[in-house]
Length: 142
Ligand code: CMP
Image 1 (cartoon, rainbow, N blue to C red):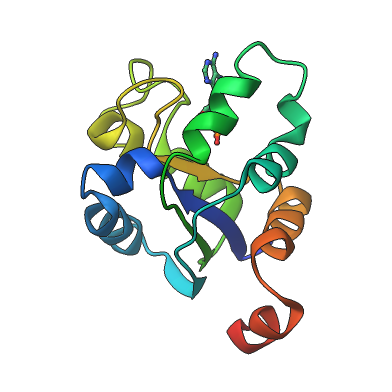
Image 2: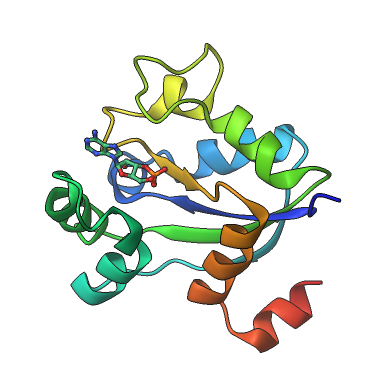
């Protein structure tokens, strides 16, 4: 059975360009509801830890610099089949390859400055929720 929850992050490029509200509206129109949300400015250590799986990739340093360049907004979202549906709604990592109407096609600048992150599995969604939100906040959000 798939989970009805996932984690997304509206990234610093979207914040800098004043697109956060439009992106969240797009997600709500796709049937997602906001269970938890916060605005924060990641430290180097936090961004590095969140993207630790990419530590050996050539873009890791640049990705951490980008993710610490300004505020971002993690949200816990709910709807049926949340992880797979959100991945479809946001589109491919590179906006040039993203399908028409997806968040990244509409709002992203490049493969790195790609407006939004979404968890890629139920296990990672649960881990990423706990990265940003306390146990108490997640209990309240149920
Ligand atoms: P995200 O879905 O948050 O997961 C990892 C992030 O790394 C990705 O979005 C992009 O922001 C970034 N990324 C992935 N591949 C590349 C790449 N080839 N060059 C630069 N950044 C990348």
